[in-house]
Image (cartoon, rainbow, N blue to C red; front, top):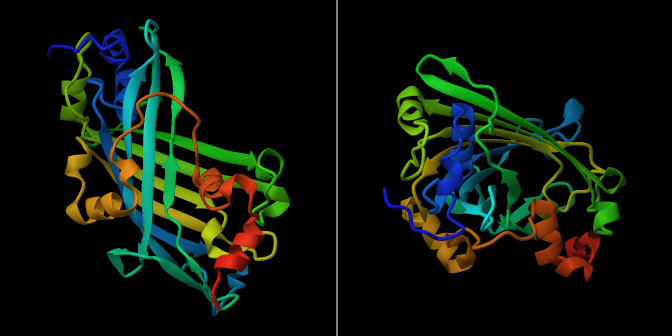
Length: 301
């Protein structure tokens, strides 16, 4: 393969990695050939209610939403260095729990009898790095399960939005806590083909991901964690696609009509968002409106 001599191209840095776990980890961050890749995400969101205390309005274990979307990402090299960034955008729609291709525009909250607009996960951007990449770079420990290579990544998330954003979102003490759990699966033949020292693999590695998240009520739901005990459990699978063009037509139509920015990864490093900071920036106008004010203004009887 001929490398385009763009100073931000990740290939020359990637080629220095010799540890297979490091090669595999980097290929989940982005394509070593510098093009965009996609992790298509599909799953469900369930109510996790201690003591089943919200029954019958929201019974414990009820499937509240489907989730359908993707993260589009690429590797970016800081020019003249051995440092790589993962640059990405993330768009995940909440869908009808019985019809995964019907995007929800509104959700009726059975606790207060009000209907709220559904705000998708729309994070621009989701960036990580820079990572110094040398021949000693290694990824997480690998395991063999039958004919697959498997590794995990578990992340305990804590963010004090009451302090950093001046907005509590109805969270206990204004502090967001969540647990994210990832499991990556790559076929052994794919591993062998894409971990040859000194080579820059073309295209996206074929990888499957299992993802689980436990987190507070989504901010568009109009439910304060400090008043209503409970949380959401997200359970999804993701799989790699070579480019945005490989996303299904129905989802591309939704993106291009309502979220056209999310057809490509960012061009350069910048601030990163998550669901809550994105809601604060886009729905609360960076604090011009409070979350309680948004709920009051947007919830319809």
